Image 1 (spheres, helix red, strand yellow):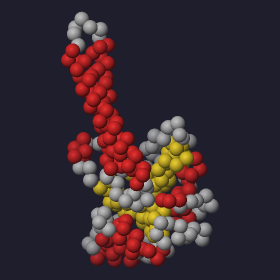
Image 2 (tube, rainbow, N blue to C red; image 1 turned 180 degrees about the horizontal axis):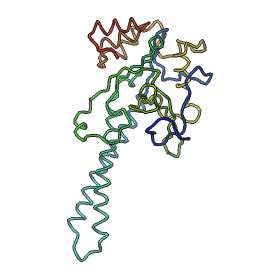
Image 3 (tube, helix red, strand yellow; image 1 turned 90 degrees about the vertical axis):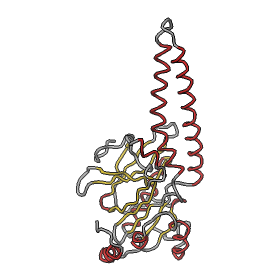
Image 4 (tube, rainbow, N blue to C red; image 1 turned 60 degrees about the vertical axis):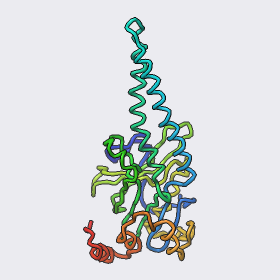
Length: 275
């Protein structure tokens, strides 16, 4: 089904509605929740390691293919059939394009720290991300950005302008991901994308979306103790997950802001431009 949000992500199979829902499940992705905010992990360590090794193998295989095809080009003679030249040239082009596409995926997994948690504050309606720059859905990138693998995106978003969509991965395993489309206020025009819940099978791909929506709506169905850290372990959660990861001090303090006025005071305290 086509999405009403434009431009549409390739593989989009449906838009998600906001509001409380009974279809929910924190699974192992919920790190922590209290009455103010919750934090969901988006990359499990085992998945990162597996994907990193897979992309290393893929990326290393293409230079080998490029070298072999280059040798064929150099050995080509005018008396040979033309396809002996066009085939290795085609391999060269495909290899360059593949490396261009796979390096960001490799960086995405290798430089994601502590699962790239996403923070939802339900009292201020703000969402916070601190993630690898390559943890996004861009295709066209300046190759010079590959020289900065640790580049990050640290941003504050408004929950009101984040809209969920389900995207199919086109694999034989039929897995879906939930993407948050960052929309221009009061429009369906998307200006950014955030990964919420990657690669789940079937109905499982909707469970985290359901939990987040229930949380943001103050629904009584949610259990704040479902996460890895219990509600009274906020200090431990911040020490083990947040500290040392480049989160701005004002943002960490804003996790627990209870009103927009309190959030404004925090930003003023740290000389942060109000959004």
